Structure formats: structure tokens, C-alpha cells
Picture 1 (cartoon, rainbow over the protein chains, first blue to last red):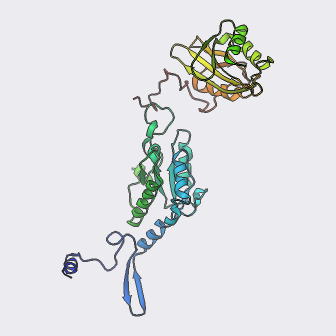
Picture 2 (picture 1 turned 180 degrees about the vertical axis):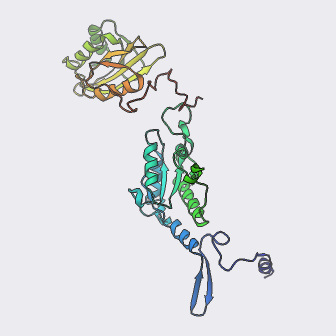
Picture 3 (picture 1 turned 135 degrees about the vertical axis):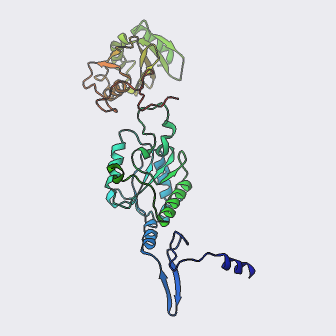
Length: 196
Length: 152
């Protein structure tokens, strides 16, 4: 009883609407109990972010060995569709997140850029594995590998591993989900930066 | 045929051939000038009958290049590896075998693309993996690319 009193005194004053940034990131908004049921009070941004993060459809994009681990995470034993990544869409127009699973070579870089441009906003990028993060084992002495997918498109989440285990990929996906629920603002290079 | 019989038979064909003992198959070292008649004999002779060329590679030995052919016979079930040495590094040329074994067309294009070995009388010798305007042969030991390669 004493512990709960201390918690009540020490808790800072919360605003009327508890947004995900200040409050509980797992559930958008607060439930206000009224006779006859409850009312969920939230902000539209919160509800939209929560909905988006729980239903991110990835684009089919596996270039190299990390794709096998991604397939393994998608199939029965690990199954990332329980987190909302239900269908992997082959068309970039219908996808939300692109999981760059594999090495990006110089010939593939314009293809990756074109696919990213074709995706509709809001779109997110996960760089899976060492090759997409920094070139990986091909960082030295190679004439054909792009040293990191972020030379081509802006990346939100990096997953380490060569290849990362399916659990590591799922951890990266959950990190992206939390990032989106918290507002999802990250520095991205926009066209306005170039106009200055 | 056993390795010993193959050795005697191949020395009849190409007297200057030498053999080495690396690996599980018989390795024959010849000069690139002797390759074409030997290839025809390997395909057509009744007791050799090598009808399956399963690999063509080029190797850079710093002072010279060599082209390695792996041949198997599906009827008589023996395997031989032919290493043809090309002494001239600045202008490496060797006869093509694409009219003897059709698979050599693409394999020789790859060896030309990455190592610069010219295959004489090849029907369509051009780059396979790299873009057509690429300068240089990347898999050579002396290839420099300061833009892309970060040296370790």
C-alpha cells in the first residue's frame, strides 16, 4: 500500500490525452470509464501510427543469403506474420517496408533506388545483415559491392549478423514497430535540403 | 581408363605435356599452343571420349596466366583436368573450344570478362557480367580501382 502511494505522488502530471510518446507505446490512448462502457481517448496520429506499425507489409527483396533467413523467419517456425507482416507483396506500390536482405552490388543499386521511389509514403527501410549495413565481408578489396545500402536509400533500422538469426530479424522488426509507434520521426534527406 | 593409361595416351598426343599430382583427378599441364588439336582428340578418340566439359576457369599466376579445363567422359567415366599455360601476360590468347563443347561459349565469355583472356575464333566474345563499357579485367592480381576498392 505504501509503495502504491509513493508511485501516485511521484508520477508526473499527465496530459488529458496520453499519447504514445509520453505514455504507453503499446496501446494508443487512454480508456476513460464512463457508465455504460469505456471511451478511448487518443490522438489521431497515435491511432494511425499504431495501425501502421501493426500492419507493415514487406516488399519481396532478398538478394543473397540473408534472404534465406528472412524466408525462415516468414515460415512456420518463427513466423513474422503474427506481428503483422502478413503478406509480402511483390509490387512496391502495395508494400510498406522494404527489408534489404542481402548484398547490394553496383548493378543492383539503381534497381533498389527505383523500387524505393515507387513505394508509397509512409515507407520504411530495414537493412538486414552485414552486407546491407556496411558491405559486410565485401568491404575490402571489391570492385562491385555498394558498401552499405544507406549509400542508396535512407535506412531506418540496421540489423547486425551474417546472416542474422530469425530471432534477430524479428527483434529488428519489433524495433521498427516501436519506432513508428513513437512518432517515427527520423532524419531523412528530403528535396528541400538540396534546394538551399 | 586408369590414370596411368591416360598418362601414356596423353603423352602420345602431346609429347611436351607434364603431369602433377594435386587433387583427385589427373592434371595435365600443356602450353596454350597445343590446346586445340589435343581438345579435338580428347573429344573424338574412341578410347578417350571426353564429352562433358564441366568447367572452364582462368587463373592468374602473377607472371603468367593459365586456363583450366575440367573434362569428364560420361561413357567411359574418367576425368581429366587440363591446365593450359599462356606465357604472354599482355596479350593472352588461346583457341576456343566452343565448337567442340558448346558450353564453353559462356564459360569463355566469363573468363574473357574477368581475366582478359582472348579466345580466338569465338563466335561471340564480349563481356558477360560486367557492363559493356567497363575498362580493365577485375580478377587479375594487378587490377587497381581506387574508386570502389578499399585496400586492406
